[in-house]
Amino acid sequence: MVLNYFKPALFFIPLAVLQLAVVPLISINNITPNLILVMLIFFTLMYGQIFGMINGFILGFILDLISGGLIGAFMLSFTITAFIAGYFYNENKLDINTASYFFVVILFICGTINSFLYSSISNSNADVGFFLLLIEDGILPGIYTALFGIPIIIFNPKKGIE
Image 1: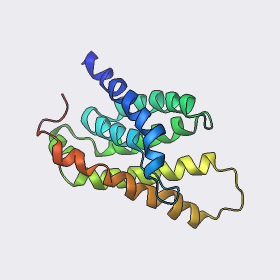
Image 2: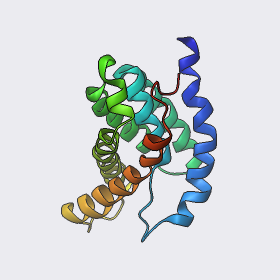
Image 3: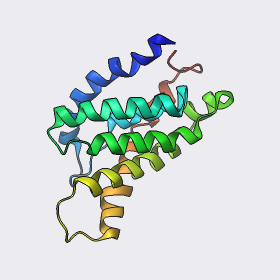
Image 4: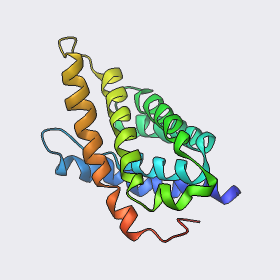
């Protein structure tokens, strides 16, 4: 069980490099997927809500420090998103939640919430309307993030990462 706490940190390092260096190159009109969120939601669905919230807080804080953005924006959005994703956690349904297309639906919901929260916190432009913020900074990045969950379903062994 103690080893489970180090798994997200091991996956976080290469994903943070990809998120900060490669993902901006594949952005479409400044809409980018969040690879770290995909990992966070996967581990939240595997190990529970409290585990995901603690990891969301820690990994969000580290990402805030290395990305150079507003301190606390990723931390708060990852923690709230892991809290919401934790409601889909069920020990009896690990395969359904992480190895089926229901994972993509969960990832879309959580990706939309995360992107909307992050952009609401870090947006300094007061002229942006609510619906523009919801659609352009919430739903579209949520769809793009959910697309990156499909390879996890395809290449996921039945028992998950254990």
